[in-house]
Every structure is written in C-alpha cells, then in structure tokens.
Length: 277
Image (cartoon, rainbow, N blue to C red):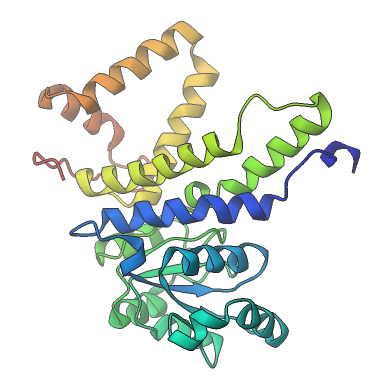
C-alpha cells in the first residue's frame, strides 16, 4: 500500500477523462452539438459512473440512469435533488430498459459483452446516435461486433480510449509512490485521451472503418514501431504519417491508407474516401 501513498483513485481519473471524451463524441455528430444539449443514458453508477453522472449534470446534460442497487440510487438522488426535481435526471424502473431508452449517447459504465445483434436493434430503434463508455470489452463478438455496429451506422468508441483514465491513475500512483513524483500530470493525460477519442472517430468517418479497428491498428503499429525500429527510424515514420494526414497530398495519404487497410489485417479492407469528413 505504500506504493500508493501519494496516489489518486483510478476511478476518479477515469470519470474525469470520460466527460471531455463524451464532449468529443458529441462534436463528432452531425452539426457538432454541445454535450449540454444532448441526452446521455448511463448504464451503472458505480465508482466511475457515479462521478461521471455528477459531471454531466453539472455540465447541463440530461441523464437517464440504469442502476440496480437501491441504496446507490437513493444516495445519488439525494445529492442531485435539483436535477431530479427539474427532470434533468431520472432513473429507469429496471436496468434492462436502458437498451430501449431514447438518448443521443449510450454510455456503458458497468457490464461487458452487451453489444450484440439484439441490443444493436434495440439501441438503433431507440434513436441512440453513438456509444462510448469506460466499461471494458463491450462487444460479445470482438472480431465481427465492431463491423456490425459500424455498418449499421452506430459508432462505438473504443474503451481503451475513453476508459484510459483508469490506467493513467494507476501509473500516476505507482510512479508517485516509488519516485515521489510523476513525469506527467493527470490533466495532460486527460487531454491526450480526449484527442485520441476525437481522432479515432474522425479517421473512422474518413476511411469507413470501425473506430475499434482504427484504434487496434494505431496501437498495434505503435507497439511494432517501438519493438522493431530505433528511435531515429521511429521519428522519421511518425513525421511521414504527420505530413500525410495533415497535408494536401492525397496520393501520399491514400498510399498510407491502403497500407493500413490491407485485406485481412484486423478484419477488413476498409475504403478510402476522397472527401475529407
């Protein structure tokens, strides 16, 4: 326990990183609406969901919550009386209703393996526009699930992006406990997490690939670069990628896209879009 003596609860960091990530998700929707003007359905208000729901209420967002524990519901309602009295917040009668609840964003904070064909039908029928939350392993089928939701027009933000506050909190606590200080700040990492969420959504639209697949490829290639290349070679490759995606050379960009989307590499060919979205 001494390692964590100067630490910070990982659940706290996870929730704090989720709010700006949800804002990035809102901005990715047509018209880039503010999160404060949307409705978010939250599945589970444990350590992370509880704090996140509070953040959303403070932000002015309408929240609909599915939570099976009566004591947790009572505590949360007592802390957020005004939101419940004005209709800004409400609890569902049964947790299972969450898949049929009208909301702009569905935010899973509890269960895994919930994104499957039947729930895709229910969420789409309810009008959910985008999915993202800190719960791990949301797809019951990790290979075909991302494509199923993508092809249905319902984006799903990778949990290793929006939920990365957890590992950030652990790393910060361990380094602070061992060395007495940490080389990064929590706020810096939250900014990077938010940027990552925005980037995978942007690239998902541009290249017609599931955001989970985009994330898998980014992380896989990042790992391979560090493993196989020296620092100088890595810097050169990163600069090449930066120039491609920030420049106007469409042929150069398409060459890289074709490399990223070889058939069979992370389950799909993808498609290049000539018009930037």
